[in-house]
Image (cartoon, rainbow, N blue to C red):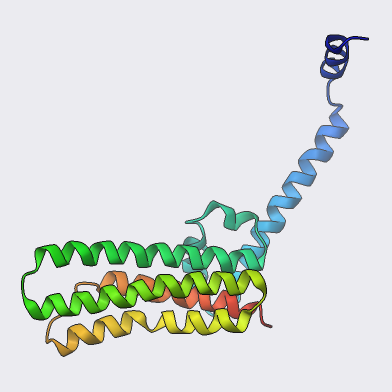
Length: 186
């Protein structure tokens, strides 16, 4: 037989209905099992509002629907890290606009702490991936305080923080990331 005969025989055979049904069931079970991991993880947080926020948070990454709990923790660090980077971009924009020396100093401080957050998330992701969960929890606990540090600097300068929305979102993301990571230690 030549190659074209083999391809013709192989490809001309249709999948039997029972095979197609079996394949469909396996795919559906895998999808519901993965969704179940995400849903079960988010249910571990208290309150329906937090559950909804957790689900929405993870929908930012399509892989969260098909990963395990450790994968969810790594994904969470990535999502929160992106938010820290985006906040740093906003800080840079404000630094270019604002000329007041005091505000410049506060913005520089906030840029520094959000830069530190990116490093903390990288360290946490490495800790989660390598099983050093205590290191990951320590890094994420430190990241959780960063919005407060930035807000406190604006408060000391007598100015309302222009990052209320970003800091609130970031703090919630840090809390979810820390919570999901702590679940791995239980």
